[in-house]
Image (cartoon, rainbow, N blue to C red):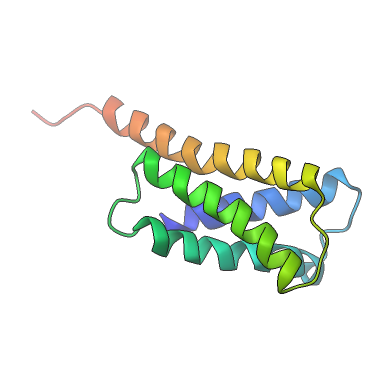
Length: 116
């Protein structure tokens, strides 16, 4: 399940870099994604996601903590800028997808026919 959250963060970075006409060279993506991956690990620990990875509440905590924590790590540890619109977009994108994949997975698991 952590892999899906990592994918969310990677998608955010790649789409964001493309929308700003920046290259997606491995080094540049790594520099952009690292603060958010650090925050994601913290978010998993804070939320107890390893115990309850599929709860929507878990997705909300993971998404919000990853977005805000990632922006703070980016600003204060990596000394990169964080404009307010960046924080809003990051939070909306990451929050929507960390909740969204959990909702989709739960919905799909309920649609599977049970063996008789």
